[in-house]
Image (tube, rainbow, N blue to C red; front, side):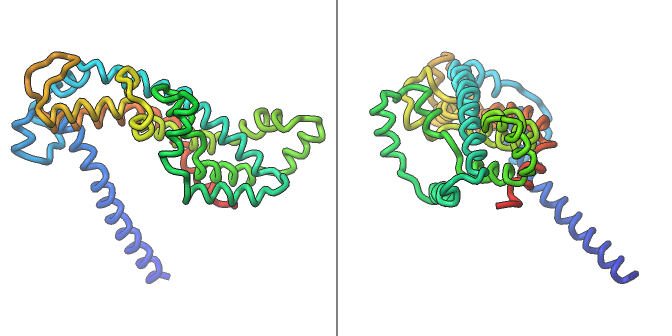
Length: 289
């Protein structure tokens, strides 16, 4: 018993050391990004690793927020999150519930969805479809181009299948319709998976850039990612801000890091409220297939 006890303690120490090193690998780059965003150009070039800047400056953030494009990006991205995540969650929950019920050809539909995770039509047919629907240069082209994520759908379906069948059957005996069962019984007891998938979709929508780059050409509809990209690229090529009319060259690396902080901060503020559901939802959703 003593040898086993010592072996377990040794394993715990090894795991603790490994996790500490891994945490450092994750945390140090994050702290460096935040530090460089508040650091001066001189301090950055003296030391590439800036965890706590000696002289804090807000110049990088000032220049970033003085450009009108970042406010356009925030507005557009918030609209994408509001309408896009609502559509994503409605389609995902309704389809996942339908595929969790004993419907005809259920296995065929599940396999068909799994195939789309590996093969898709590509961007050209999607662009032609949006053009035919006259949705180019509108937010609806970006919102509708990403309706359901197949992986998230499978996770939510598996979670619904893990719920007690007797609960749904008793509701049917009381005369409840499928819609009533879904919204009044299934969803209220499925908050872990709902919170998890909502977080996934929110991050996806918040980081939206590819579809927006393909379908949107209007400068008044730039997403946050594209707005930050254009600002940073202009600074890297030593061009001037046309919107803010600032004619002084700024610290491009500091602006890059400030753009990263500005992008990830809203998601980091939302995550703690959903964290308690996150692990439970993803584990339960992955157990039963």
